[in-house]
Image (cartoon, rainbow, N blue to C red; front, side, top):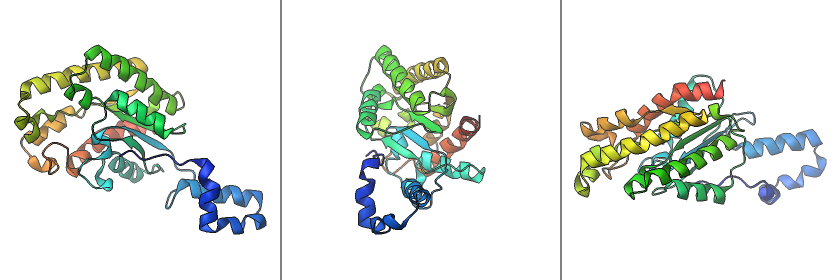
Length: 250
């Protein structure tokens, strides 16, 4: 399930519940502003931390793993090691989402940019459901334009990840769809999202080759035999790290 973005209009209600409203009359305007910035940043988060929006499907929400093992969260941890003050990712993603589903999820969540980093990984469910390639191209390009908008119009702050190859999983073996056919379809969908990423001037990270390591190492998969385990997500985060660093330190 996707995480909703904080609605500023509810701050007064929350602050009253926290008992903060009782001290507001005795606070200076500067102190009130500071308190609000800390409140909005969340616990353990710097008010000046760079903001990160992660858009996707089950691969981004981390179906079957703990929150800390999601690849966007692991990416943030790696960036922290590099001295980057990046906030916890705001994630809009849900298992089963297609490109159009994600766009509707964004409409419902109403994220408020600009963000210093936006990542996008979407398309496996379009492939699974047999979406037309040109429809995927059109919908992906439109979604990518939205992602660039959330990055303040700076395409270089957007990082797109390729669709992983689930043909190597036990789930694919049992599906009866033909593993070679699945792999070929994913390649075609990835060719499209890579072309559209280049056209938009955004950054691209190919995680598909490393996703195929699950063929020989089942420990890289979650118990459902389809989604990645934390170790696989860690590999994706490492691959995304160089482009993410370029994105937030242009």
